[in-house]
Length: 357
Image (tube, rainbow, N blue to C red; front, side, top):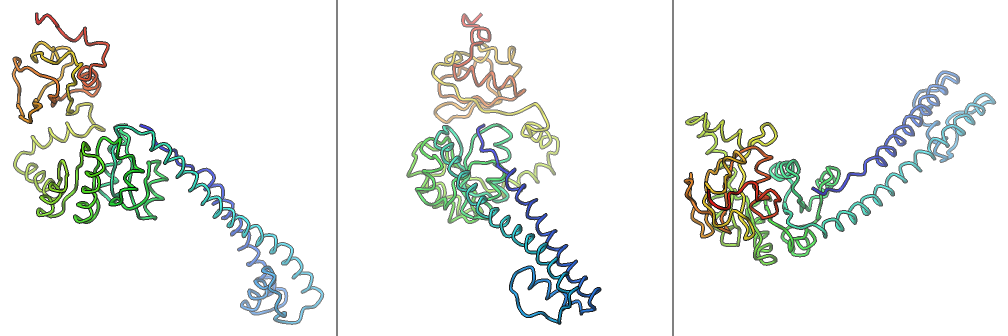
């Protein structure tokens, strides 16, 4: 999955330089304050005040009369302190300027890369749910763009190396910059249901074929989101409650589902694969495809192109273009199945018994 690489090296080198400058400044202040106090028996406050006005070049009148020894010590503070102050100011200013320049350049590179994306996802909102979604998509190698208007969160997104389209997700221009015309789907997980409704309305108007999934906090909002054009509405509280009930009543079933859904810990996954017209599977019975024997995959269900869901399909079930296979098995074999279903696999002749024998 293409991602932008966070440019942190320059930032940290400037940060270290600024720390060194501040440490040097602190040392000069300590030496000056303690020197006036110990050598000339000045109060600590007077010594600190004299050191500050000396190294900053303010040049107010001396706090106390200086003898020759005091003048020599003050010259030492001027020479060492002024250099440290100048270095600190230059480093801090350079850090601010280059930081802003890096932000601008990074944003330009990101927008150019986003323009080249195809079949990606747009994630509206980078809160707790949005960040988790992005972690999962990133782990699976799936391209996505985040739409976020909070500046403090935008910096975190860029530092994570994710693509960012800054701005309000309800604005057409922001979604267009996120590549909504070429996107595969959009997920709206903003904090308020009203905002999610506006996002869905805007997204559906810009792309009629887009898969849109929206978060609903209230049951009443779910209906509004569907009417606005959402393909599917997810209620985190409802799903969380159902999983808790499953964990209580059917703990082993719940354990099985967790194994199938957690791709990071286990090599087993549940995947959906859509048959395209050029797939050698089209028009075949499941037993003829030899998916079970060749790929060791279990077909849990077949969603027909008319929307009918066939659970636990038998070996004589015929699959056609537009059908979706809900399959379970090892990741590597699921990847082969996806290639076969799209008609792009070079192993199609091996895995099919085209004569039906």
